[in-house]
Image (cartoon, helix red, strand yellow):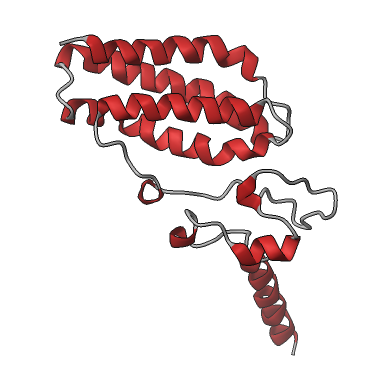
Amino acid sequence: MRAFFWSASIALVTMLYVVGCGRDSAPPAAAKATPDKSAAAAHGHDHAAGNHDHGDHEHADGHDHHDVPITEADVQMPANYAEAVTRIQGYRDAIRSAATGAEPELAHRPLDELDIVLNRLPEIARDSGVPKQQWEAINTGARELRNLFNQVHAAIDEHHEPDYAAVAQPIDEQIAKLTQALATP
């Protein structure tokens, strides 16, 4: 009888862990790009709209429903190096806006996507015909940007106020260096 009780308890805890607080806790990869309307209805607001607060409810397990794991398959990769630099600038703008706004956790998705693009940036540069003498600078710049943005991401994950201003100038400098590779024949 004791073995049955422990087995049933473990099964229940496992089920609660996997299910979380509802459908918006960890949508499948295919659903990540499309907002879950049932989750919006369940909470009375649309998470994708970015114009909500959680004053009316708490998530019992303390999870951040904006921090949903993604993979490279969830990110539309830039077609070439020029598009990658433009995309990096857009991610920077979205992250800055979220990190300095009322809901810094909205920066999770652009931070995660940026990390994936930066990780692939040397390969994108190579495949786009960027001269080989630029590859080291691109690799170093991508690595530096990842480190800088990870400071913002870590603060958000730890539920601290992210200090975007502390990394803003070095981020802009690294992006300017990546942009320079576009001008090199």
